[in-house]
Length: 168
Image 1: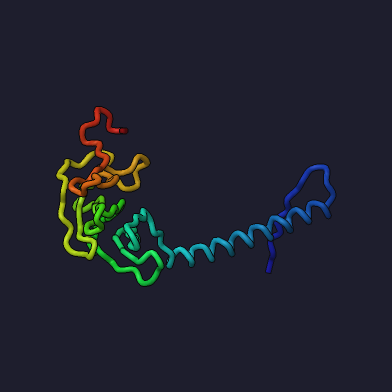
Image 2: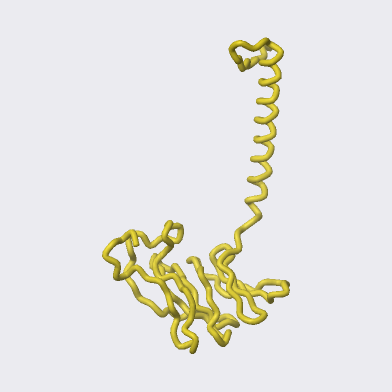
């Protein structure tokens, strides 16, 4: 059985110095390989909770593309949506009875409203699909919910539907 030995040669240095460098290199490579293995295992379980919003003692956030609510003191989160599309950027109405959010169902990214207690989402906008209407786009998708008007009658959102430039 033959063994393969790799040498890292640094010109002008003796064998002992080169051996120490090689030993450090392989220890670093082994450590990095082990760290990568553990990170992959942790990523299989962990998911990102994003876009939190609050009203009184209630929090709403996006987790794995769905909306959840939870008490601000903690506890068990309750799933509000279960559609195959993404639900992101939730915002409570001023009275806390409704939640507006940006949903990406059937290819379009639109604005929806759902009762804070849960229920069926109601679509508010009907816009054509843009060439850059993607959740992962650097500028964000189209129709991002920003907030509600103070009286709670209207949802404010950012739209690129009438831009002269598809990058904006």
